[in-house]
Image (cartoon, rainbow, N blue to C red):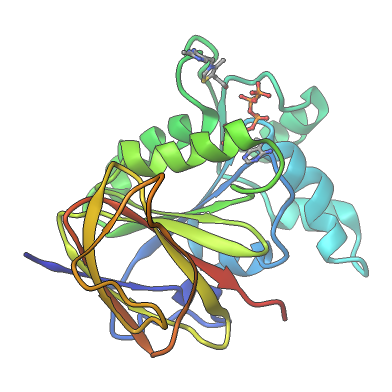
Length: 255
Ligand SMILES: Nc1ncnc2c1ncn2[C@@H]1O[C@H](COP(=O)(O)OP(=O)(O)OP(=O)(O)O)[C@@H](O)[C@H]1O
Ligand SMILES: Cc1ncc(C[n+]2csc(CCO)c2C)c(N)n1
């Protein structure tokens, strides 16, 4: 089985692959409080998208991260490339502002069965320019607020299990570790940890880990039984093998 390497190098001031694969980052902004490090991951991303009402967050909240600057100048500097969704949450003034700057708007209001995040990920998956790139989608504002939205966002990880997608908030990140691979997670100790968790998301799992305070040794996990929450990262590298998909979550440090 192949090894998949992971490293949250997008949290570093300057992007490096840290021995892992070279990734092309795409940023998707959701309709939830913008993480404080949004300008940093914006800089690392090649493409910037807003999921429907996520455009309101960019418009309203990004200037607050630059209190000494003119709000209009900040909004022009952080222009999304694409806004996609069913358009029931983005405000008309916000849509008009970004359309005037040249943002592409994709109205998918006919689809009321998939979330706006799902629609954005499907758009990224189909982009011809990114076809041969090793893409990693960073999803800002994926956690906090409404629980149905949070679970919907986690479900997108499962529906697009062959894509690298990382859900982000100010406090933590969540990503899928598909059982099709073994995993090596390089920890950026200055920016993340020590609290972490491994959660069986697709049914019962048997998993083996190294690098944690409470390692698993071909240990069965399932909802209603054991799941690994409040675990602690102890080494530079965490390894995970599992016969079914797991969610990996780790805390993000406050500056
Ligand atoms: N409170 C939240 N927590 C986590 N993610 C959220 C939250 N609110 C919105 N999102 C994410 O942002 C995306 C865009 O949000 P938006 O409010 O435009 O969605 P919506 O489909 O209009 O929601 P609603 O269910 O209220 O109609 C959603 O698809 C979801 O992924
Ligand atoms: C069983 C079922 N439950 C809920 C919805 C509603 N829904 C799910 S995603 C979405 C679009 C949100 O932008 C909406 C309205 C549905 N279609 N099917």
